Image (tube, rainbow, N blue to C red; front, top):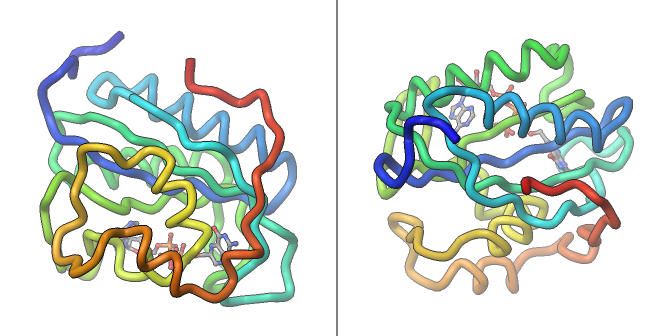
Amino acid sequence: MNVVANSGVLAFIALGSNMGDREKHLQSALQMLGEHPRIQVLRLSSIYETEPVGYLDQPAFLNAVAAVRTDMKAGELLGAMLDAELKLGRTRDIRFGPRTIDLDLLLFGSEVLTEPELIVPHPRMLERAFVLVPLLDVLEEAAVPGLEEPLSAYLDGLEGKEGVTRWNTGLTNN
Ligand SMILES: Nc1ncnc2c1ncn2[C@@H]1O[C@H](COP(=O)(O)OP(=O)(O)OP(=O)(O)O)[C@@H](O)[C@H]1O
Ligand SMILES: Nc1nc2c(c(=O)[nH]1)N=C(CO)CN2
């Protein structure tokens, strides 16, 4: 266990992979986040296999969401996430295209940030069933700032949610 204990901010991170050993990439990213001295991984959603969205000519993804606690600022947490992506061989070629690992910061407590390099809540999360389905697995105490309806109502209205199916896995955060 690390130093964060019960203080700090509750944040939610989306994980996605559609290249190589997808499950291993999710597992490694989660492990790297958990080994960071200022990040405590609290919960991991179920893993979902999801049809690609945005750029369609690419393999299916595995997606999940982790709930973490940190005493870092949002920008510092994003830095740790980018480090983990780089260590796992992430390159940025095609926008919305294939990737070994993608880590997106969905929510950081109730903060609203609009810097170009960090927008929170994540600007596309409400349009993405591959984010909302796992987020609803782990979201308990966190509210999403600025919502007019419960998060599940946004998922109900989305096309493409049939493309999100539970993936049988032993992957767990325990
Ligand atoms: N909430 C956020 N989470 C992660 N990155 C963000 C966020 N807001 C802004 N960014 C910026 O977006 C940049 C590009 O991110 P990335 O390459 O992961 O985009 P993408 O995965 O192709 O698209 P998407 O963000 O729609 O998933 C990052 O370098 C980061 O600075
Ligand atoms: N199903 C799915 N589709 C995507 C994903 C993803 O994680 N899952 N990530 C993207 C890049 O932002 C673009 N499209």
